[in-house]
Amino acid sequence: MATKTWIIYKTVSASAPGWEERRLMPDDAFTSILAEELDWSGNLPTVGDRVRDYTNLSDPGNGVTHGRDGDWFVSKVEQFSSPDTDLQIAVCLCEYQPIDAQWQAVNRGAPVAELIEAATR
Image (cartoon, rainbow, N blue to C red):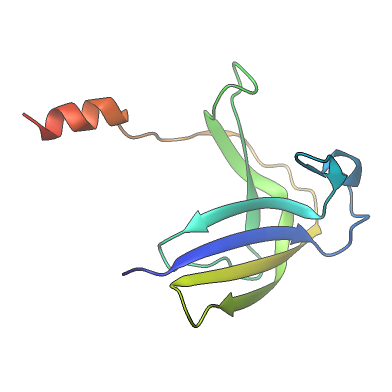
């Protein structure tokens, strides 16, 4: 079974740029967490990688159509493993360094319903 890794990207400092917009739900508390994701590939972020930004350019807030390298880069990676499960946690400490990255269309696979229909033929 593949190891599942919960990757958490967080700022080195809680007062890093954009702190006013970073909130946790449901209590609306401030956070230093920039993003998080689950990974089964085993390819963890490394120092120098950038946190990706995603958006829908034609209909903001309604899904994702484009991505780009963001203004935050990974400056340190700390890994933790559970001795009782297949779960790992990787905490990526990030520093703010703005760049001029261009939006690129996200390549999407076929819709799930289409894949199921093709598999049952």
